[in-house]
Length: 167
Image (cartoon, rainbow, N blue to C red; front, side, top):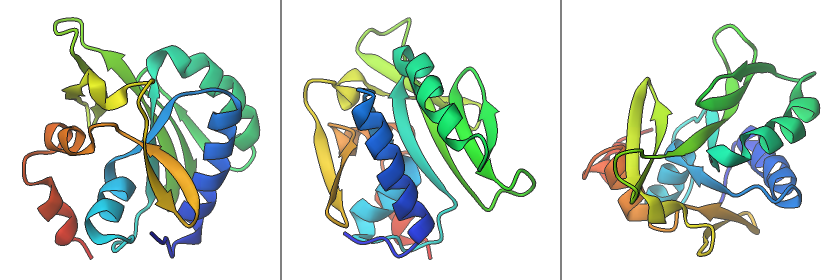
């Protein structure tokens, strides 16, 4: 699969290398992943890249990424995500790390927060013992193990149409 947007490709490469060398479990998710899976390329102009991170890896993530990107990007450090923006007003590009939390009610579910709403999916989507990958420009990037379930749960059953209609 190819990515023509070189901002997206360079961030994926750089962040993946940092996450891998830091032993941080991650999964590419949401927009960029959905577009690649449905269209086999990035059809629409994406302004962000999302990497899901286990909440327990939050401090390691912060210690590795903040020094690396603090001079280049504005930082949005919240309880539910870490994000890097460029520029701060009307962001033209950003990458973020939504944290994955265990559901306190259902031990078989996890969630991340997006648009001030909890987005639930089966815990098995983010299994740290069974990885699923997508190859982007000869780079293997980890994606949710149960990718179909992940998208059905965080968006809806018609998630593929969401990406087919994008331009």
